[in-house]
Image 1 (cartoon, rainbow, N blue to C red):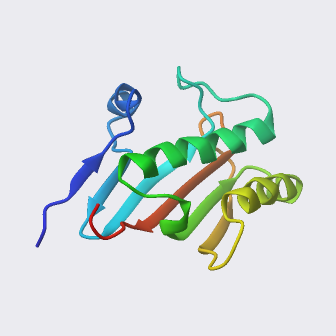
Image 2 (cartoon, rainbow, N blue to C red; image 1 turned 45 degrees about the vertical axis):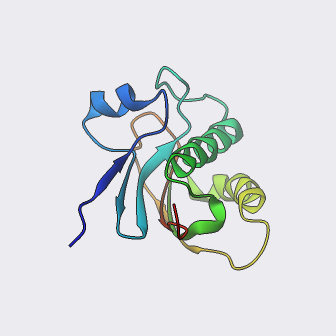
Length: 132
């Protein structure tokens, strides 16, 4: 069995260290990315919702890049929403920019009551490209 490899994006390892979890774990040819939120450099939430969602996707892109992946390598998405009924259109607009063409990844959206001060979180599983 191959050993798992921890992936951290440049400049944000301290944020993960403070909370004692990894940004992502590479296991074989799969990358398991922890939930990404719209946190600014200091870890605080971006207050405007659409900007928070975009920042969560941007933070996700940074983690993916650290592992040699892009959005095209994502096979499964789980997103968490504090108010899905009012947030879905905004989330879909950002999502559609990130995934503009088929094949689209699997997607599960979950309504939750708490995200530590955030209103949106996204976690993914990606297949790491050969040779990375």
